[in-house]
Length: 213
Image (cartoon, rainbow, N blue to C red):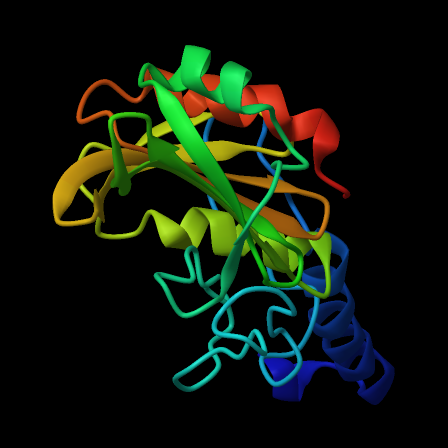
């Protein structure tokens, strides 16, 4: 059919093929609570997180079109005693459901927080970590991708730019964590609660105003 068109007609089809995908890019959730990835706003070579993932915030493995955040430093980032800049120990304890003793600040960029059980200072009852991406689309896609292949995924489109919660491992125990996107940030809130996800969602909702977009 293309060979039957005049030369100006063929150029018009080529121009439409190039312009339409760009016009449709960047679609976000439709308000029905779904959390499907939006097309990446930057190339795979530059869509790297600038936050957690070891002391320098590096990302391992080949880059993909949807970058994945390093959701927890898992002991690779030094921690120092201090107050969490995102939520008080008392408020964290109320929303998480465990008594909190000491609190440490993870020396990452941006900083994270770790909360320990009052009656056993070696037991972690919660953790907050943050990864930064180059664009809000990269951050949103990373939040969605973090839940891939996890069973029992729940979502809440009303938390920041969207949030997912799913089971994870904390010190060898199966627990819940909530991951939400806000601007170029992806925030992970871990709890020690094995069920339900409500505690993780409540904590995420409480710290949204303290997270820089």
